[in-house]
Length: 360
Image (tube, rainbow, N blue to C red; front, side, top):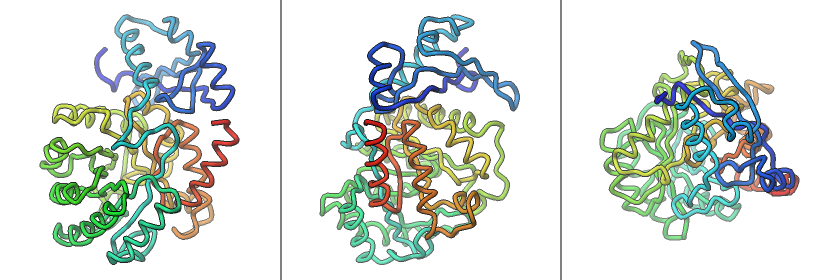
């Protein structure tokens, strides 16, 4: 067995705090990515058409080989367990010993979340300062809306929007991410001091993206999106959304490695709401722990997204804070290391309480 699409290992029995510490000390559990969340069981998953064949068992049984039915699977499980448990190195110099916050700065007139409130350079820079003061570890600066149905802007317009903001905020000590799918914007943003490239196409949307990023020292967020923003919600289909996205990430990680971008420089974002219906979103959120098997940092962006309103009472983007926090904390329970959010202060407060209750 050689293809990732034939075998998946999903951590189960997730725990934090004293229970996690005791179980790890006894060898009955292990940490997800070396972080605060541990697991004491796992599901061995294989595809069976559109269904899953699942064998579940405790971690000790998995390690001892009692769940393995062939030599190839035995070797694959050992490799996957190592990927799941290995401590993640710092991303763009940012240690991952605690949950980190990426604050959103949309320098656009048509963002779904803020309606263009920060479209000017001065407003965007002031907003970035405020997010830093509220606890943002990273500022994610974007000059093109990628909301469902959004139209493209010209490269020149995107550059004019983001470069002055990046230069100003980097000058004030911010760790900056550029949210773009264009290689020319990546190049200019990195020259202006950006440390991270956040690409909704996972460096596949522009043929120059991979070499430009490879030649830099930047970290990368690879996001999954089915289709493209203008049409992505028209008819998204999957055999099994969490597993399909896992396979997509495995392919993109391999493409990055071939181009000279090591897995240690990568974070993975499953792209909630990007070419996905609500059942897809919910399945992906429930199975987030699966993606630790890819050995990279996990980033989750659920803030203010439309699925929250659809699953609740139809609230607009300005009134989805409660759902945003609930989904974010569910991500932390599954070992996510970075949360991409609009409401930094409120999310930081929620994380503090999560940590206190969990004994993290």
